Image (tube, rainbow, N blue to C red; front, side, top):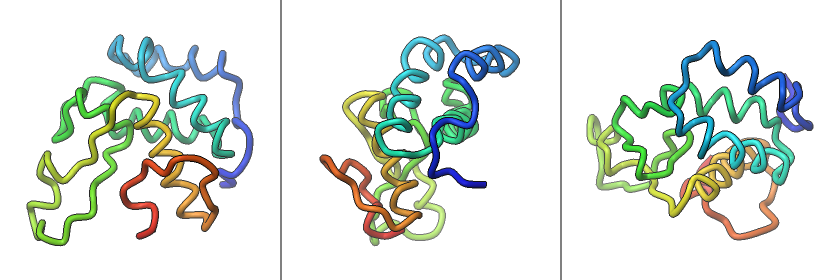
Length: 131
């Protein structure tokens, strides 16, 4: 799969298909557009970012270790060598952002890191240099 493309589906199609996932209202109203825009801005398939965010946040329900007020759209962790073993999954091992827009930008930047691509604006991904 080539994730270094424009969206592999239209925003309307993705929004329509999203209903089948029973997303939390926050996913639709607060997360969806910032994630979509982050994909466009960073040259990453927005559909891939939406899918990852859905999986990692339980479609905005945030049922795992990361609370919604971390604005972390993908379960992105910090790099803290003092955290070992099970502590790597602790809530505080996860990155916190000021908004869903910032969290989505960090998510897209992380994908750029996997592709060995630079970031042309403020780096928000705390693990970018480690991927």
